[in-house]
Image (cartoon, rainbow, N blue to C red; front, side, top):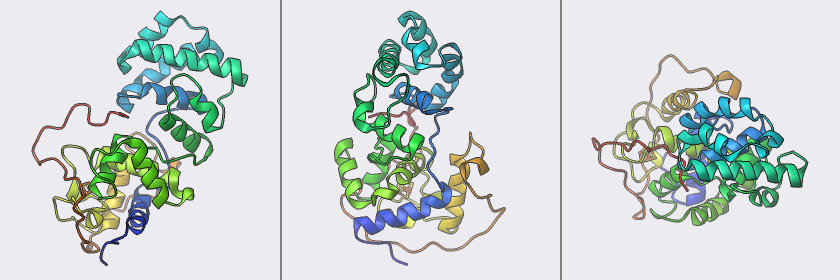
Length: 283
Ligand code: SF4
């Protein structure tokens, strides 16, 4: 079956395939509740989720509630979050965010985009992520570096398009009820497969749909999608997040190749060194 030529149909097929890898939206930042999710998302800017996951236990053991963190000394918070980078600014942001939650929302994380972005440290992207993951509220599509890169390689946007423009394009093309799931499918696909310097095109579940592919696909897209799911769940319980068991083996053919839009952004050359910060959550 040829790849769809119109962007909305292309994204629908991308979403369908990646749904096999990630049946429902999850994020790789560990959290127990919306409060923790908000704080670790703020800390994750320009940092790797794995580092934030290592910081999280000590942070919330010491300051488990917004009231506790709001009253915490700046210097002590800086020590705990130091490994997240930009630690002075981040410590200040999460303390002030906690203070805002205590003073304006009676200690509860607000559930509207407008209220969230009014909190110190909470960006538009942070609000979209927290609302989607914590409450299933689709306020937008989360566009991080991975979503922007995959969108460019698929030819949906030009390489280098600003995140707000990427989001505006995607939200026009994707039905609102799919915004949350496709956000996290594209994030994890970009982080684990469609990496900035060494995309694993041969194992990519959406290879036949991608004008920037550098390799022929290996196995059927269903098998590739299942393998992607294994990568996504590397730190989680696969069954607990709604994923089916991985088949032991199998093979098949891909679904054909589509046209190659000229605006597609080519991945980097094979063999070049991946940046140590490749999975940073920038934007
Ligand atoms: S085929 Fe390659 S460049 Fe295209 S989405 Fe897959 S990994 Fe990325």
